[in-house]
Length: 128
Image (cartoon, rainbow, N blue to C red; front, side, top):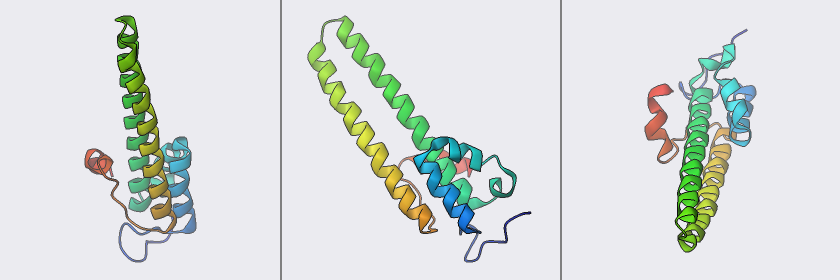
């Protein structure tokens, strides 16, 4: 059975389950993937907005993390360990950025708000 139409616009959550799926996706990215695949919620714009933003955030984080690992390995091979230490600080900054954006997403999804995540929304808006 499909959830009732959203009250308050097309990006409003249709039910409490929609809110739950939206904010839980920020904690556990696999939930975001499942949320856009299961039948009643894959067509709901609120769930798709938050789930796809979280997936974009997670993929961006993983790609940036891999790039930092490769750069740090190259720097270690050519004996520029000091620059490798600076990259280690970037790991921390990257992680903090991910956590802050995820917390902001959780707060907005739990509140039933439409939220365009900085930077990430620009990349994923065509998939929502």
